[in-house]
Length: 406
Ligand code: ATP
Ligand code: MG
Image 1 (tube, helix red, strand yellow):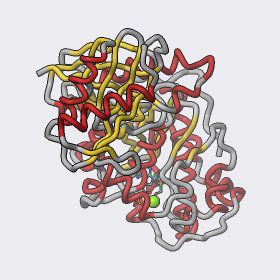
Image 2 (cartoon, helix red, strand yellow):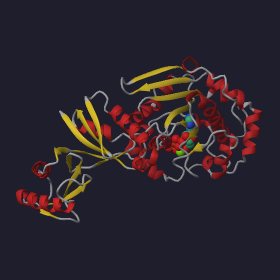
Image 3 (spheres, helix red, strand yellow):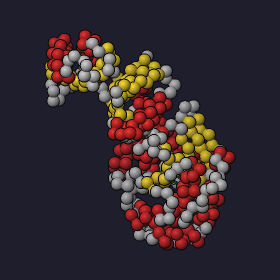
Image 4 (cartoon, helix red, strand yellow):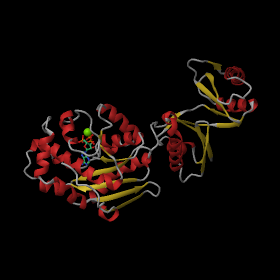
């Protein structure tokens, strides 16, 4: 059955001269989210009107995962004619729960003969008379919105919240350090919410990538692909690193490994056109995430390191993880490489010390050795297809890639 929805954006509207570009990107992303359903999208005065074949739940579910959408609602779309507007308003009030209502008019087409105020009182009186509901302007059980736009009127009652933010793809790419814990999937979602596309980078402990491919890591990528569409995951083996750094003082281990992760992300960034690194770090959540250790993580990086969860409490992160749909998967059993690293690192390790060890263990070469053994997993939600191949098959090492700095 065809459903008609009105879809609104918020922050996109603030974009000044760049607004058309953001609106185009949003339209493309709404289009992509509805793919497979017969649908059309039209744009009118700052909102989209979407017609889609499918159940209301299916269409709503899809719209609620498009970044940039502020809210949406099933809509009656009628000609600019008072009798038709009344009929639609009565239709939306019929079967309504509760006993009170209000009319919320918005008239962007000033040529409509009734002012917003006149429309509200006229419609309000007739809806009250026909339905037996009474008007309550402060806390109504039902709000009937009437938007009078050019040539038509849009009537709707149930607004659903979209994820907000900005359209995916309008803010470049990041290489996103992805662990399978609770935090890094949420951090990826927040990066997408601001328009970036993450390339997921995961370091795995097992002897082959198979167990990572079959683990919660790819399942989490699939959940995030509901929001991000086609996704790329790079699986880098931990083995080379483990061999090369045997004998490192245990209290340095976490910071040193984290520096290695950063350098690997930096090395891969040009191949994916990424201009920043992102992580699920939250300030002082763990000893490896103190301000001092974050500074030593970043020292010498040619790319900015973005930490969308920096100021979030764990409870806030968990609430978001539940909303996104990653929480239960994040709790699944999985042996991460961090599990074999000491839990008691130094909290104020100087960047220079980390750099010294990184030099001693030959990180610049080690990064490439590890990347040579990496696997690229491409996930396309359209066909639910997961393809894994050696990274070197799909993306050749760019000759111009500079060696990462320690
Ligand atoms: P949680 O804290 O809920 O276990 P997390 O994803 O934050 O999950 P941490 O151990 O806190 O895990 O690690 C901090 C950050 O370091 C992660 O958010 C992630 O960005 C990065 N990270 C940790 N382990 C890995 C890994 N195996 N591969 C890639 N990135 C990782
Ligand atoms: Mg964490």
